[in-house]
Length: 301
Image 1 (tube, rainbow, N blue to C red):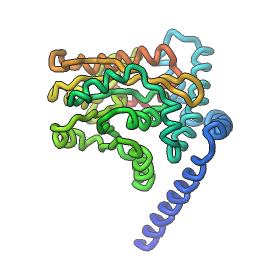
Image 2 (cartoon, rainbow, N blue to C red):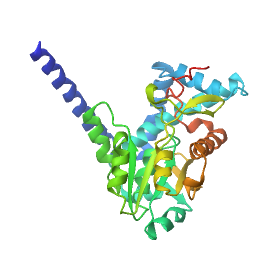
Image 3 (cartoon, rainbow, N blue to C red):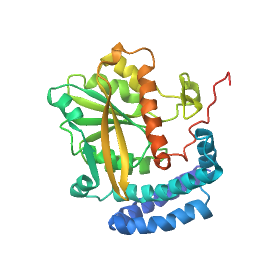
């Protein structure tokens, strides 16, 4: 029995390594060619695999009750086309050059960030799973004069997690597992840093204790960035990544709070989600709708 289990683990590892080798080779292709493949990928995701179509449709209908069935259908198909593009754009990150990163991601008013860092201050940054956040974070590492500590949830596969970690930390970024956030903040308190949070992740069921109204639904939220902001009083910046054209993005920076300790309880969290909601309402198709964002429900509903 033990030998069978060991053999099964080895087979899974071998398949993972073969998969990574294939992805690394695929990443060598021009992004224009990968985008062409993505059109086939869209057909496969949407029509053959029907990947989480029910989840996407339910999320869209609940978030936009004022929209017609036809409007929801247009957003849904646009989302799956973009999801296919996003998958291949992430694959490209394995070999993308710094020059191409700078060419594909333009940062507007980034001095809002660099002014704090240049005078020795530390800041907190928030964004959502909107646009190509992976590409944006990689490009940001080339543009700021400080280390960006990105808070993330490790993948269940240690092999693929290590592959992603290598890609994500090619520039000046370091990725910190979510549960080590506070320890890392304390360890770097004497340095000028930027800690980055994807604030729209779903908390575990036992951690779903704070609820806000978001996209017409009661939504459980993570409060890590607010807790750290209240402890450190660091300025909080929101990064909004917009698709300009296929494979090209612009990022706008917004000051959400100069001195968070002056805000009321959960006010910062509400501001961040209000900003994300505005962004989604303008261009709905580029948020991560296939995520089961509302799988938890408040007990009194």
